[in-house]
Amino acid sequence: MSDTTTASGRYVEDSSSGETVRAFVPAPLPPELNLTLNDYNLIEEANRALGRLDAFYSVAALPEGFSDLFTYHSIRKEAVLSSQIEGTQSSFTDLLLHEDERVPGVPLDDVQEVSSYVSALNHGLERLAGGFPLSLRLIREVHAKLLAHGRGADKSPGEFRRSQVWLGGRRPSQATFVPPPPGEVMGCLDPFEHFIHDPTYPVLLKAGLAHVQFETIHPFLDGNGRVGRLLITLLLCEQDVLKESVLYLSLYFKMNRQAYYDHLQRVRTEGDWEGWLRYFLKGVRDTAREALGTAQEALALFEADRDKIGGLGRGAASAQAVFAMLQRHPLTTIPAATERLDLSYPTVRDALGRLEEIGIVQEVTGEERGRLYVYDHYLRLLNKDTEPL
Image (tube, rainbow, N blue to C red):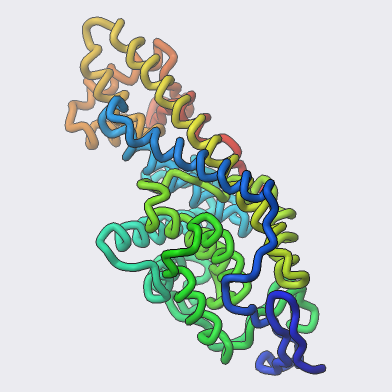
């Protein structure tokens, strides 16, 4: 067994895992790309779709708070979808119930992982908003948040690995892919950090290339896939391609999961960066269009339901207050809504009753105690394509 060079890196002999295997060390970014006219058209389509999505949230005519509201739910949708790619069984509804401290039958480890993803993404976005650069240090901070609770909490959160890992198979010799040996990790990460700071490289291509490179380096013992997908969001927001985190690209990766893994592997084995970029750019384009359509549909739903409530006459004001709360918390109990709105229990109970009468909410327990009300039409919109694999 000897070192060999490929189109996208080199294989080295590694025995750090106790078995002698060929580990892959990727060449520094960027690769030499052979893009066609169709590829450049696809880049333009993806950029236009992102521009329309970003512009929608910049429109002054949007109701106050709508942009913040949809960012809040888009972050959670991305967390659910990205975690499902790694095998968690939690749904969007499970996450909302967990955050509301109602977890009937929810797999706790799974939903904690998703909740930690929300914390990790929010931490990264807050640090960028405060002027901290996207860097190896920030990536380590995000990883520490991601693995703070649940499975993976014993896998050195926030620390780059000092031992070998592998993908697929019970032993390194059975693996489908073996990342760089631990002694090569920092030698890969340093040029990676320089690349993500390169102001001259097109941002969408940079995000696509950086995701694959990060996945290939696999610098952590656990959580690499999720951090790699977080990296896309953080890059797009840092570079002002998106002002808010409203692109849940993991939807496309989940719906085209086998192609996702196949393209990542073909970059390593064949140097097929162009094939990966076509897949990635189509994902950005299609997910941006889907996210815009969902936001527009939600806005239309809110306006229609607000008009319905306006026709209630007496009690409409308290019903509108409860309705505004349901837009952020589409599952609620009477005590929870009472606490959030600082309204009396009877006022909230009556308002939810009126909203149920006109078909805006549904009570889903059928019980006299512990009643749970759901803004069903909106929750179904948020839940679209987030069923566990």
